[in-house]
Length: 368
Image 1 (tube, helix red, strand yellow):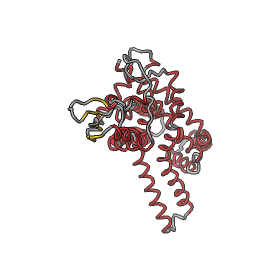
Image 2: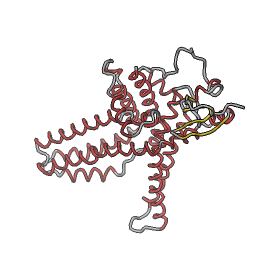
Image 3: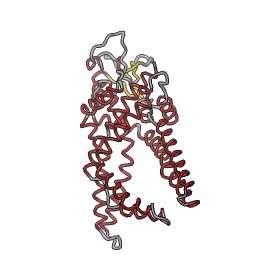
């Protein structure tokens, strides 16, 4: 009788399955080397990578005394390796990008249609277009956790020298949707509180209590300093939540706790080798790239501020609220170009890939 095996994935058991079925599951991405497995005639669990003839043929021979571990990536090699992974899986990363880009393009086109109609004369077409735009907005929100998990799964597979099909990757990513969605929402609310609630509240209270006096100016700077410090703290704590939630299978509290611990690790190493500063390096490069992409948009906003707000701020009796309202009203007609938005979305997986590689390397050093 041929050997038959039971495979355990996320606590669920599948099988019995013979070798032909296992190979089919493997080609579909349903069986990974790290999955638990056991023969039907025993209760002892092992890993699927130990099943004879299943993963052996796809692997390069390695010394028996050297376990398979992620290859350390230096800070200097991090960016080149990121581009290597991105190039190798370009079409799969593009497929993930199109999941989010599709609803965004739909909202953009429908928004243009709505803006061409008179707001005082709503028609059935306008109402349908508005409903479609709202549905596209919520569809994009639903797909964001799939996109996040997919980036982690694809990059980890490429970093390990394995291949995984696009639809097999999506199937795995969907399994993590509840966990990723809840953590993403929690992280988003934390940032929103300090950026959209605390910061405007502090500045508004400053103006309401004393106007733009010498003391209120420094109080405003204090509020900005507190917000900046808190955002930095939050960023460190949330630095690796995506990797721990997906690649390590951690629940919400554990993912956030281990993310904080790993980001702050490496105190015995040079500062530029620590995870947090390597993360700062990655974000700085990405921010510079965004500035290049959106430079026409940013320069238009700057010249608008310089010509509209700056002269009025120097006059006595100027109303800060009116200045802000006039600036926002004039800025409505200034928008980033569609091409820049599409190019930014296509390149965005580079940021996720870099952080997955940083996570794998930092986690390896942290375990040592």
